Image 1: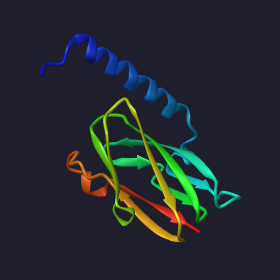
Image 2: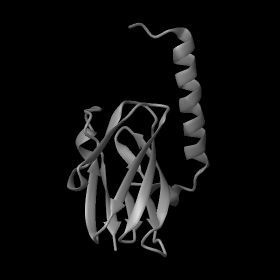
Image 3: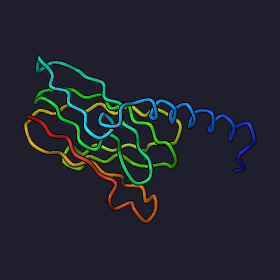
Length: 132
């Protein structure tokens, strides 16, 4: 199926908007997010950017019992978000926000990784949730 000029233009506009939002964020905030919820029933939204070959933030701290709604945007490729220990995964089409809802019941570290091959740095595209 051929991509039309209008489809390409819409994709570029979406990607440019996401890139502008990322550029406006403080640099330190891009790599670590801390959300220590006050109540075990809390639900928090965490924005994540996926791009070759990294997630931003790549470390997310949460309190045990927190329900995290990940709003993940890919900037450049159909990346994947896989949290093997929680048997959770999603495809991340570029220019769209993909929502993934995850409950972290127990303290520990939970790795996440890209499971759609995206190039030579793909093996390094990972991060972790630190649940206290």
